[in-house]
Length: 140
Image (cartoon, rainbow, N blue to C red):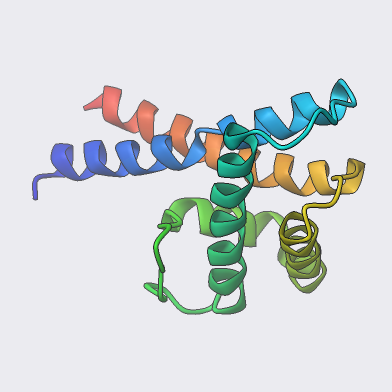
């Protein structure tokens, strides 16, 4: 695969991962204190987010290794590396936060401010990675 094709593929996977529709839907529900039942859209968003976070949790447990088991949802290596770098001194606590967030989503409980802080940290890493890859792609 040529360098340009490789960058293009990397950008596509990071951009796909960084789409935060599920997070936005949950934030909207939280901000507007909406509790008008569980829609299919909300159920699907919660399920997708839980899959992503569960895979991320497994990958963070193997943070020292590369190419770990991805599962159904692929976590781009650059996104994982950014998260590990950003939470270097507190990675165990961050893993606990992600694990707690998965449990909250599994229980279909209401997310709190700290849960959204964890989601924001993950989204920021994904967006930064997509932006950096996009800049590399356009410099070619």
